Image (cartoon, rainbow, N blue to C red; front, side, top):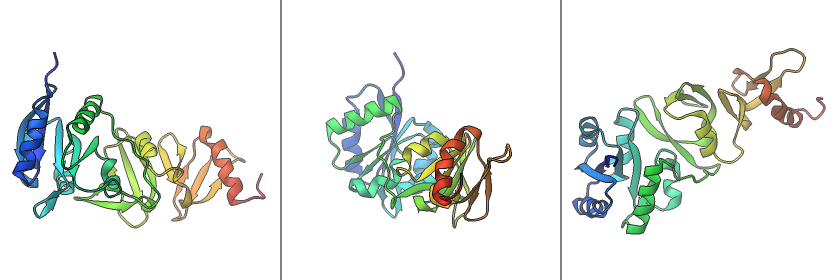
Length: 244
């Protein structure tokens, strides 16, 4: 029999923590090892107790659950946001959580979430073009519009995200997850290590030599993998109808 997953509860309402703790008590695969009402203590408890899952309120007294995401060391535990926000409001940070729960938490909904946690299966809801993605930028974390993302490069288990108007940032998320999470059709893969926002593409170069490249609107030049060139040729035709 496997050990239960260790849970940390972060909510500034004692009653809400009590209710969630009681709901979790009937699920033997989960054990509450600590709880707190503030970000700093939650970060410390994460170091001390090494929880597998953090149930994290969005609005804390004078703080937010996003402050925890910004301050906690990576790799983060699995996150389950607990919120009074509606689905549209939470869309921006679903990408970073296995699930979210609306208050008051329903038993059946919690059971569904716990199964998702056991499977480590994020809730997949496609973002819309005008949605934001929640990322760490330097020592802070913020919402940034998807349209601000220029391109994303794979760096091992991490990816480096490049923005139009902000410094690049390293994120613990593989490239294929970005494609799954991003708004439909916003990005195109140009290399096994690279995806690019379609509207950031200024020019495609290749065909006469063995080297294929994509030129972005900011002047950056990125290599294009051979296996991706055929797909990109369709874009080339769109940019230059006379090209063949």
